[in-house]
Image (cartoon, rainbow, N blue to C red):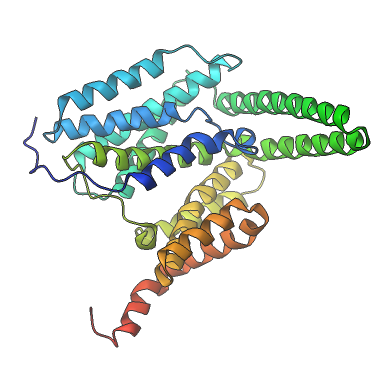
Length: 346
């Protein structure tokens, strides 16, 4: 084991991390989440990722006990039987993806220790996708099998949600007979919306899986640097400083080209997944630029409201993507800093 660097103080600021953890665990279960997110049992993504961070930390001179404890927790989660009413194929697929991403991320962290978090995470996700494609190429997994598994899981979740909504509508009808028709109409309308969302989400599961895995890696990274005094990389920067290499703009070009290829449904779906994944990164970059221009409290509040209010998101998300993409050439933060300092560095 190589010698680690001098132990540093633990990162502070548990409140935001706890809020992010709560959101990561709860959001997949709120209305709309089960109909669109492939993995709603997000602990199967988070715990292996945190175990990988702890193992990398031990390799860098950190605590062996921390690595052993979280590795044992990851093993325990991976060996547990599926929860009641959860398809075994879905649960195996979700757990396998969590382990594959965590292992790939750990390898990337050990090999490329000078890379920032996002570069490591993207390389780890890329390696996990390549390994997944290798498994598919060997014939062990049906190429369309994963989509069928998630489509069946979406249908099962929607069916359970519809049953629950119909029960609620029946209770409303008993208490308020005049509202019976409206209550059942609302339940039927919500069921139709969920089914339509699932129809769009099932072919695009690669983007959703990658985004969920990226969120799990980021949260595991933040948790590790608050549990350990050994650094495996720089702490996550605040949203207002979020950026990445300008070369990633080519992923949007590639995704667009794949969509425009005629009569190739699988290739078009792959292109849409590429655009959704990297478009989300550019949206975060755009929100970061917005946060850089104004106070942090106003930025966080307004972004949270925009994301929570779905109709408002239809306006703000494309705007944020455009702002993030334009930053490739304009570099809004540097330009504003340059104008504020009269051309002098601060």
